[in-house]
Image 1 (cartoon, rainbow, N blue to C red):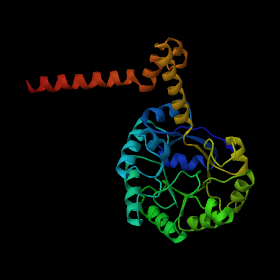
Image 2 (image 1 turned 135 degrees about the vertical axis):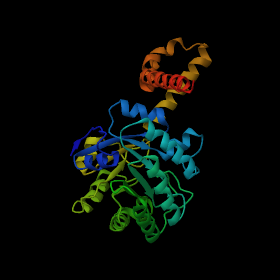
Image 3 (image 1 turned 180 degrees about the vertical axis):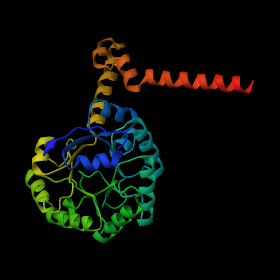
Image 4 (image 1 turned 90 degrees about the vertical axis):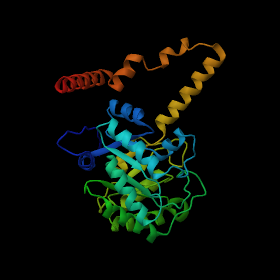
Length: 309
């Protein structure tokens, strides 16, 4: 597989573009935690945005254990989808409840503008996929949720991504068997979480080679998965490589360093070269475009007043 970058066009939906891209190469998809981080991902030329559940939680000072509500996740996801033109994949955790709640989750997130929805088979409250102590629901319960998600979507190109955390509980063979069951009830893509070696990733991918279903890998830092490049994942047979917390962790480290500098020196003078310049910030925020839009609005207001007089 080749590593792919792409952009959408007005004539093609983002979901259709995402699906088509999976036939062409492997996508590196960084995680966003708000609209601005999503805009930076798009500006960098990345092919898609991943709305990270861990990132959304951390940005609110919360651990990644499913504490955010569907309404909170939907609202932030909507802002992200409005801020970018590239496809957006959202981490919907366990679906926010039972089968009927999963239907509502898919409907709400699809209306927000996403191109992919990830559901996982952990019990609630969930844990970070690379921590010990996880528990998973029985296979039939997860199959019912996936089937409900598939039936709830309106856009046939919307990806329903089934993540399994079974590797830590049932071993690699158990994870493969669950993933096959999830595919059988309609999952559009499979995401094996926290595999622990190149051999495990290869074994998993080989089990789905004939099925030709897209596979996702999670390249988080300091997790159970060895550090592999997008090219290496591509060679193993994976179609999307997520980097869910890379940007958040870089931001957090930079903020810590800046605060230490301010505390010790009382000035940010030596930090200027590490900052995004004002002009670049304004470019990312599209100030010029917004000024033009504001000018149009003012003209319309004046015309409206003149017409009334």
